[in-house]
Length: 517
Image (cartoon, rainbow, N blue to C red; front, side):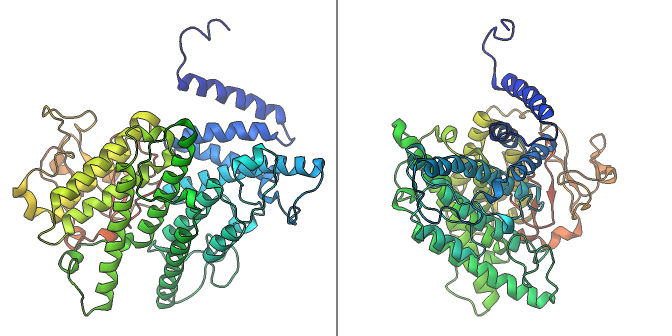
């Protein structure tokens, strides 16, 4: 044992030991249900793995979390609503406290599932229609063994907000779950592949079935459902408890008793802005370059797109403002899943820079991009979030520059980050290679970020490679699909399964995936 404790072990050593002990404990369970504490250990380990990337091991650990949670019945803690009335007597109150611990384990798994499934563009592991567990209450009630009522996560977006408001439950964890659920639905509905019933959006009300409707009906229904999510988000903002609202104040995360409060404000409000970005990101496009900034147009679609663009920019500005008004080292106190939310905000600002009308202060926009980029770097430095975040942002910047920025080439060097030059003019590590840019949707059987060998980059002779860009200023071939480039057709492969340098840009659909987290 003394040999193990020599020196100061880093977190990776603790992680390796915890994995071994976890495997041993699971093996001991055999066919018996695991203990709650074992599931809690698995939650912590899985969270640590997901921070560093939604790769195979983390993805499988999350699946194990869900299965073990089902095995313990964590999804139906409040089946039959035993706590509709306040529990009376020491025994029932003790039982309520024990169940609260189980609720918190469940919703921690639920949050990781929503994040990871969105990043990987996969169905949720948890069927929301089968959940009968109340949202968690404030810590003080649990710690002090004082009952407070809560509610289920309702099926309809508006009902979720209303039920939580009427329960007078001001738990940050509960309010975060609700806004994440709205973000997830906005993400699914805004996907161009059409309607899916995950979650709660099956028109016929048949779980697990795709709704059979014409494309026209689908489009109309999606628009209406997106409007419902938008209305629910507005109701959510109006219903937030006063202690969770952001009023443009400085978030110092100090003293200690304010740290958790500021962290909750940061997490909830950034996620709310992310939900707005998910709602409107398909309205980003170069066609708006002429429309944006005009008072009005006669085309209803153009008006809708212009308004959608404004909503996107406003949401991105909202994320920027929260970050700017937070303590320099705030990343250590907030949810690391939010790193891709920051990335999304930076991507929108990049788009704004290139499609904004003449007269726009592009230097101001560039300064916002730079701050958001540096914030992504802070997450990488402290939490070891994937380097693919920053590299994908650089690829996106180069792509926008090559397609839309020709008129800005004389004004400076906006693509300096993609070229990998630091202040000394040296190439940054990991970029002395060609970057694969697939111009068509990837094979659906291949995980995001991976492509057939036939599309692999030829690093020996770049001129023999097709559908790719060569890093370092050398010319690359551009498929005709790019001639009618539209932001709504850009998909950044941000599944966090990418190692450094494996980022790819696919003209599939815009899925600037979130961390949320």
